[in-house]
Image 1 (cartoon, helix red, strand yellow):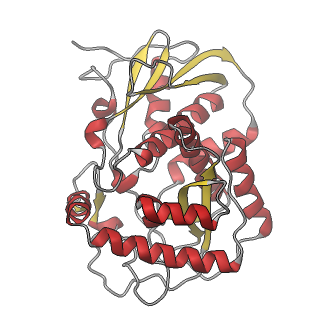
Image 2 (tube, helix red, strand yellow; image 1 turned 90 degrees about the horizontal axis):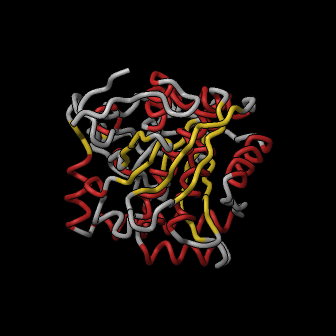
Image 3 (cartoon, one colour; image 1 turned 60 degrees about the vertical axis):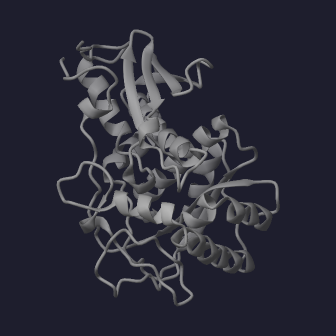
Length: 329
């Protein structure tokens, strides 16, 4: 049965397609794109796609929720930029665990120029895995990144030099745990070094820097054969965390992550993920203690300026919509 996209609230059919098209530009672990959308008279539903979970890298689906939270922030922000209030309810039905949010675009709202600015950055934001320049990020930009996290009910703590050095050690520790796990390696290889025509995963052309074993920040190997591209730079490294660690907190942290990433993009900066210390539970627990024990670390980012890098692909709207087999206006 075909379920065409029609107008929802104050959005016409083309606008509905547009905002979902912006939502799917969010980042996700290994570019799995673990989200689906349903258009209903009540609003736009965001669903998790369990078939795109990563049992080895993300056994409790924490990062799946972060990725879907990032897609939700894009959805909310583009609806707002169109002059409509995106009334959002997280986890609206307990009997449907895949339903993560309902967004109801039914009230007019004068757009906030700051959110319009972030909406404009959505198609420009992409993960840049190349080595970054050695340059100091202005304190004013760091403050903007911290504020972006706080607006979405997450926190970006200040890290002292000794904490950064300890974090670097935890990255190495998590990396060794993961590459020693055959299940993780098999999963990782499945999603990386994809052929150019693939609509998901990380293709060879977007592989970026190779892991470094020389004391630098270890970046995940996404299949690049250019073995000389280790990251020797000193980027800004930040942690985004939450005070509790429920499903709701993880969805909020994903929205905070995307707001931080878009704020960085709007400031002319690149970013990529340092995932090892939050993907390995024991190492994540050590990182939590490093941050003082009161904050659950959700995301670690490197922020700076890298070489021009290509975008990773995205699935078509037909692939991410629940039920419809084609799109009709």
